[in-house]
Amino acid sequence: MTDRHNRYITLFLYVCAFGIIMSPGAVMAMQDGAGGAVPIGRILPLWTIFPFVGILLSIALCPLLTPHFWHRHFGKVSAFWALLFALPFLAVYRGVAFYEILHILLIDYIPFIILLWGLFTISGGIVVKGALRGTPAVNAAMLLIGTILASWVGTTGAAMVMIRPVLRANKNRVKKAHIICFFIFLVANIGGSLTPLGDPPLFLGFLHNVPFFWVTTHILPHMLAATLILLGIFYAVDLHFYRKEEPPATATGEDEGAAPFGIDGAYNFALLAGVVAVILISGYWRPGHLSVLGVEVHYQNLFRDGAIVILGLLSLRLTPSRHRAANEFSWLPILEVAKLFAGIFITIIPALAVLKAGTEGAMSGFIRVIETPAHYFWASGILSSFLDNAPTYLTFFNMAIGKVGLSEALVPAALAAGTATANPVFINYLTAISAGAVFMGANTYIGNAPNFMVKSIAEEAGVNMPSFFGYMFKYSIPILIPVFILVTYVFF
Image (cartoon, rainbow, N blue to C red; front, side):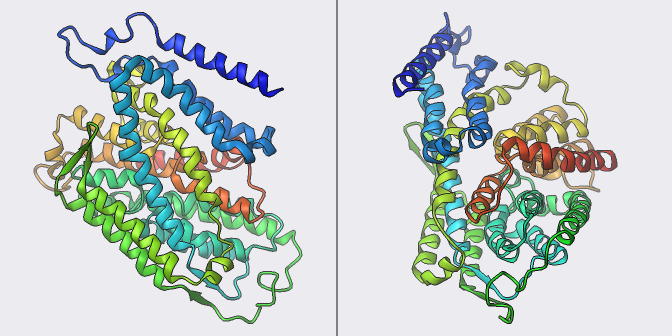
């Protein structure tokens, strides 16, 4: 197909999108009968999520069908889908559309990328060295350590600290994609379920009056069950492949069989602790906000993001280049995530808006059937597999509050089990929402931020990772879904 044909196809898609969205009365629909503003999610039809579906399919299929084109132009593909939605959206809804796009960029995307960049940069200066040999027992132990670490430094922090030691230990293994997939299951997702520091959805709950250690006590049984089952499955699978391979001559294929175990750049752990500290401070400190073209930007969030940037720059300044070279560190994974998620965050606007509209939006039929804790677990989980799990969590959190007749100020009292103010129904709902949003982020590469980054780092290290659908049909559906069904049967 020539460049000329590509231009015609692109122009045709833009015209179609503009013509469909520019339906009669579209702008008038933004006002209610009294002339007041109507939330955008109430009037957007379901087909406005087409660009979002398009970027997901591009991520899923292009690396498989056109790998050379994808690796050279994935940023342009992301920009195409973002503009396919944003330009007609701005043309029709003007100020409302501008606000929605600016809001998601300032409040969600930029802090998201800053946090990922900070954790990626700081953890890239930590070198775990020594004679680590990727046996099933060693691999299971590293996954367990990463899973425990994830709730205290975040799934992204734990994934970035542990992924390189795992890759080095298994450098000579023939079959190793399964190791990375289980790493995504446990370290990049399920491990972050015990504190608000572990995963963004739980941090949002913390910001909305859920006590800090509430999730620790209420999700611990679910997390332990899922973790132990998955570690058992992993050990059996890894042992099967390990026995089929010739044992390597040395621990990593290099002349380091006698090298003692050690950590270089350990001061970066202090910088990671600094990231955790500023996130905690931003959750409690309320100094006010400023307005950026109508979007409220809170000072504590500016402090958090600025501090993370400073901590990342300190790591770059303090860490010798040889440490990053030992980790085969490069900026490609973070650049790939930044470009692709820019498109995802913009095209996700209509999907999140329709969800937030609840029974008054285009997904009202879906929302109305959510009644039991099991429904909340699967609904929040399935949507978190494909949408950003933080706003998905918040949507179902607000749904649960409304269903039991609470206000946000009464949440701490309602969650205080064993007291006269406790609300067992709400406790069950929030437990299910929390577990679903965190656990099922492992179902796809885009379900949680570190998933895609881990995949990119592994591929850069030479691991032949499965495609988007390959990951789902070979790993997450046959392995995770039965585990989640068991969790539902036992706990919900």
